[in-house]
Length: 130
Image (cartoon, rainbow, N blue to C red; front, side):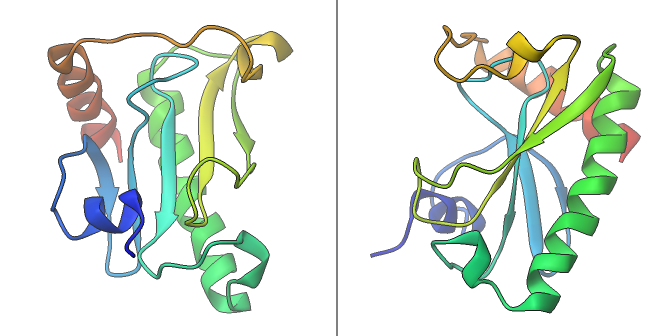
């Protein structure tokens, strides 16, 4: 069965896409820790990030680097934090989160609840800086 991320890749369900190429896709997290929180995924559906072929894993991180630069240009922050947990969705993915403190990346804290319009506006801004 296709993961929710594969359904996003196939445009079966909507997402606020900020960057895309033939192999990778980046989109806003709909329940972000911080404004501008993005997920970066390979288009190839592989559950565990370290099961990706070396060239796909390398490409994922290089693509994430470009997305992180666009996030940093868009959202005032000290850094863009990166984390891989891999338990939420059975599809390899990287979280890119604008941060100013360590607490900004605490996944147990309450998530933001942006409106669809706020997500669209943020996606457009990041996309423009990609």
